Length: 110
Image 1 (cartoon, rainbow, N blue to C red):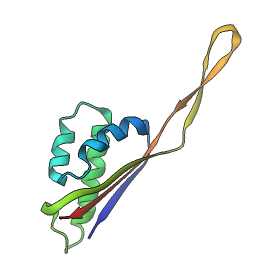
Image 2 (cartoon, one colour):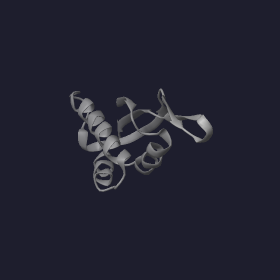
Image 3 (tube, rainbow, N blue to C red):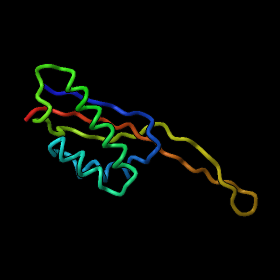
């Protein structure tokens, strides 16, 4: 039986978060949390919290053994972008897109 956790509107670009998500996809949940704890990236801390939330959601069900969980699916979708402007030469302005992410983690028993 699978459970999931979703984190929305996270202020990190999806491209950067996907780099870390690719590392832990398919791993045992305990190994994934340990790996992310020692990874020096901003996305690692965020993904670790989402995986821990998915494990806690699974722990609420009596029929699931938490020790046998693994990361079945993990994907990062783009969220809404914050649009900002930066002054440029000769009175112009350019748009800066500050990207956000929606992170979904699905854990399942082996």
